[in-house]
Amino acid sequence: MPPQRILTGRRPSAPRAQGRRRTPFPPGSGRPGPLERLRRTHRQLQRAWDRPLTAYYLILGSALLITVLGLIMVYSASMIFALGLGLSASYFFQKQFLAATIGAGLLLIASRMPVKLHRAFSYPLLAGTVFLMILVQVPGIGVDVKGNQNWISLGGPFMLQPSEFGKLALILWGADLLARKGDKKLLSQWKHLLVPLVPVTFLLLGLIMLGGDMGTAMILTAILFGLLWVAGAPTRMFIGVLALAGVVVALLIKTSAHRLERLSCIGATDLGPKGECWQAVHGIFALASGGWFGSGLGASVEKWGQLPEAHTDFIFAVTGEELGLAGTLSVLSLFAALGYAGIRVAGRTEDPFVRYAAGGVTTWIMAQAVINIGAVLGLLPIAGVPLPLFSYGGSALLPTMFAVGLLIAFAREEPAARAALAMRRPVLGRKRAGLRWKSMRRRVKKRPSGER
Picture 1 (cartoon, rainbow, N blue to C red):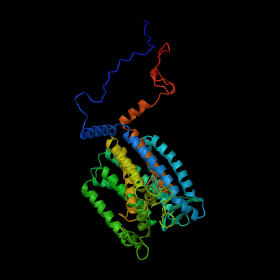
Picture 2 (picture 1 turned 180 degrees about the vertical axis):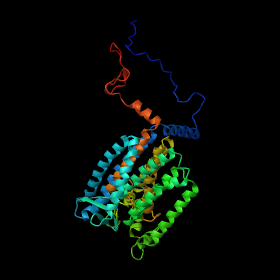
Picture 3 (picture 1 turned 45 degrees about the vertical axis):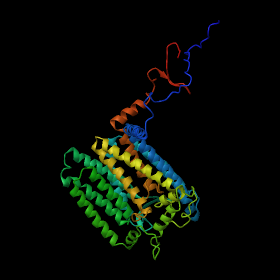
Picture 4 (picture 1 turned 90 degrees about the horizontal axis):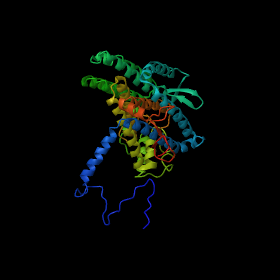
C-alpha cells in the first residue's frame, strides 16, 4: 500500500464527528437569556466608552459629519433663494464650502497648537475682537443687515461679524484668567471670581447690543454662566448673576416691540393678525410635512419663498422637511455626541485651563444649538442665531471650527490618549521591531533566512 502524501507546512485535519454540531456555549450551559445578553452588551459598550481615544474620535467624527451634512443642506435650502436673486444655484454653497475649507485649516492648526500657545493667543484675540466690534459702530464701516449693525464689509460679497469671534475670545481669555487665579487660590473669594471676568463680558455684551443682536448676547451670557459653573461658583452667586441677567433681558424685551412679537410667537399655530408669526408657523409646517423619512433631498416646498432664512436660522426646519424625523434625530444625535465628548474632556483633565476652556466651548455649542432648534420647534423665541457647524455663514463657521480644534487638542492631551496615540504613531526612518508589511497579507515577522 503506497504511503499517504501529506502537504508540506500543513497539519492533517482530524476527522470530524458525524452528527455533532459545534456550539459557542459549553455543554449543559444553555443559551444565555435576553437579560444576560443585555448585560453583556452593556459591558461591551461601557468598555468602549472608557477607551482613551473615545472623546477624540467622537469630537472629530461628529463635528465633521455635522459640517458635511450642513454643506449638503445649505446647497439644498439656498438654491431657490439664490436663483431668485439672479445668482447661480450653488452660490451660497460655494461660499460656505470656501469657509469650511478655511475652517478645516483652522481646526487642524488649533488641534496641533500646544496649550501654552492657546493661552498666549487669548489676549491679542480679545483685544482685536473688541477693536473690530468698536469699528462696527463707526458710520461708514459697520454694515446694517436686517436691522442689526454687527457686520464689517471685506469687499465684494464677503462680510465679517466680529461678535462671533467674541465668543471664542471670551472663552480663551476667561479660561486663562480663572486658571491663573486658581493657581493663586483666589477663586474662593467672590470678587476675584467675578472681576474682571464679568465687567469684560458686559463690555462685549454692550457692544453687541448696540448693534441690536440679542441672540449673540444670549450665547455670550450662556458662556459666562458656563465658565462660572465650571469654576465652582457658589449657588447664591450663580443665582444672583442669573437674576441680574434675567432683569436685563426682561427690560430689553419690554422696550422693543419686535422682541415682544417674537416672544408672543412661542408655540404659535396661527400667523397672527399682522403675520408676525409667519416664520415660526412655517417652520412648524416644514417639520410636520416631513414625516418619518422626509420628502426627499431637494424636494422641500417651504424653501420656495414661504420660509424666511431657510438656509441660515431655519435650516433645521428644511432638514426635517426633506430628511424627515430620521434626519433631524441624526443631527440631534451628532450634537449630543459632541456635547458628551466635550464634557468628558472637561471632567477628566487635570489642567485648570483645559477644564475651563473645554467647558466654555461645550457650553457655547450646546447652548447655541438648543436656542436655534428650540426656536424652530416653537419652544423658544426666535433669537436669530445659526445652528453651529450646520447653518450658512462663514463668520459663525470659522471660530466654531477653531473651537472644535481646541477640543480635539485637549482630548489628545489626556495622558491615556497621548500614550495610545504614541503607540499608533510610526517612527520615521525605522522599522517596527523587525516587522514588515506585505500588500494584502497579514503582518509577519522577518526571519534571517527569509522563511515564514
